[in-house]
Length: 363
Image 1 (cartoon, rainbow, N blue to C red):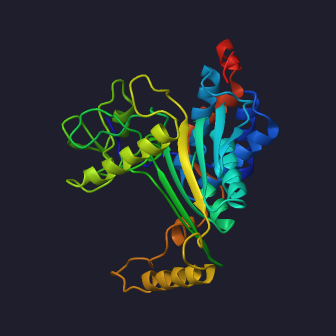
Image 2: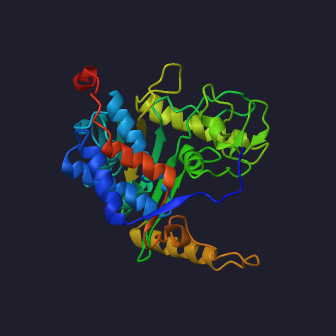
Image 3: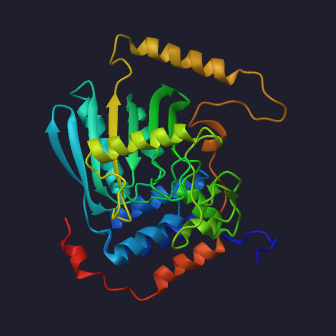
């Protein structure tokens, strides 16, 4: 029976968390530089208040390497297929490295072409998309991104359905701004991300109403139902009750772009259980019949119009997406669920399992 005791967490110094992340990865064949890059990505998510894309993901990455689904030494390969168009092949490697390759290629292509299009296939879990958006927008470019789970990760039930048929299929939109930084939208097309549900599960918490429903459409707050076999809980598409068709339509659009157009694979029976595919676009704000000065003027007008609005009692100031309170970093030691920290420690202390030989032959 569930108790009313508060979730148990442990304070973890960032240096200790970083060293543990490096150790988990390098013991499984990940190079030192790559392990440090992944650790930095995960810790930035923790510090930014997004543990759903933080240390929790180490469990996923380690198990994927141990099972042969993820190749620890894979390096993303870039193939240029036409003017302003490239494909990044993640090679079944760490998704953070593939995400870096996509950002670099978008900026490189836009130096020579008015619009850049980069597709991504065969990458491991990408983590938060916002860092890619900030990197591209920081180079003075607008960026759009659409990511699916290569057809897997089917925990989202279409409106009226009693089975998961889609992943949470996030979208990214980033735009260069002023001295306060860019506008960055990194959001799921579902009512919540799967990682948010798993974070609550690890912390021993109930999920908020509206995040999950059962096979009769009734709300449930028990996170574990999403992970039973077969699942007894599902994430609805984005939208209030009666309006889920909007989030569902967005999710289908993401499947078409990331799965069908980019060739990453659409939702289907027998889809892989890990990894991401995507389609990304980048272009300068003066790509059409405008100027950078006119763009910046419009940006500031919108910023002023939205952030000077009259507020409801007790509500914080309105801010542009990707700015302000949501970007305030957590100070002091990280607060990590004790259950998660113990599991991560086990990954370091336990004998290294032998990976399937077939994994080393994948490309």
